[in-house]
Amino acid sequence: EIVLTQSPGTLSLSPGERATLSCRASQSISGNFLAWYQQKPGQAPRLLIYGASSRATGIPDRFSGSGSGTDFTLTVGRLEPEDFAVYYCQQYGSSFTFGGGTKVEIK
Amino acid sequence: QVQLVQSGSELKKPGASVKVSCKASGYIFTRQVLSWLRQAPGQGLEWMGWINTNTGTPTYAQGFTGRFVFSLDTSVSTAYLQISSLQTEDTAVYYCARTVAGPFDPWGQGTLVTVSS
Image (cartoon, rainbow over all chains, first blue to last red):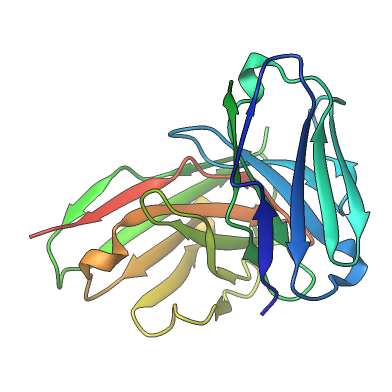
């Protein structure tokens, strides 16, 4: 099973700042089959990024994904108030597993 | 638009069974696989498995065999998750999600299943 480790666990930032979230895999993810989701309290996760760097439909361009192999990054260019949430990475190269999440909170 | 609507919250006693529904709209139901996922209180996400909506064939992830059953009623574009012999550790929010070549999109709104005596 591919284990995904997200860091940091919590990111404290102010609106307008840049957020950089990391996701590291225990082994290389084939095809860069890595997705990112945003989850707000009481809501279902929402797909942001798939294929490591492709934005899902309707996702603002301040969200970007990068990386390959075992190291991936989600960047939020300038945080809007609605971006404070928990973010999960997920691999679908070998079955499906999720990282433990990064909480982006208001500083 | 593509939408998955799940049934409402359930409160069950240990040993009972529960059946959660997931009704799809906005796309051809039998064209995409549908997954089930679990999120225990304050925890992360686990993939439980999926069901091929064209053939009805389920695939269960490790740890979700035996007491968990995925089924369909294609006449109403609805998938079901049944859990038997409920245990307190089954308390969680259960999600269905369309699986399009890997990523999960969209998700149902979630169904909270609480198991308590």
